Image (cartoon, rainbow, N blue to C red; front, side):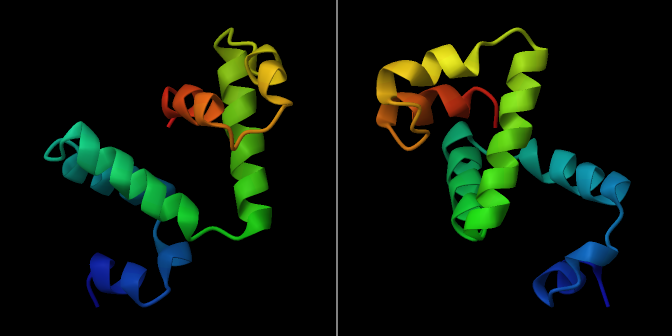
Length: 94
């Protein structure tokens, strides 16, 4: 079975992180920014609420590591990551 068939068949957990990154890099170089954004949107929509929360935590931690004050960015929006401005800010980190 090919790597793509593994992923489509629900066997994604069997793909190493290194292979996943290599595949991502190979595909991403051929996509427009709009296609990348759509792919990210599609991927996030498939996550469970628990997985989305974990992703939010990871993105927030990564942003803070790079000196971005995520809490301050979200404060004007009641801390909600679903606001349009927060969504635009999140795109910087996806």
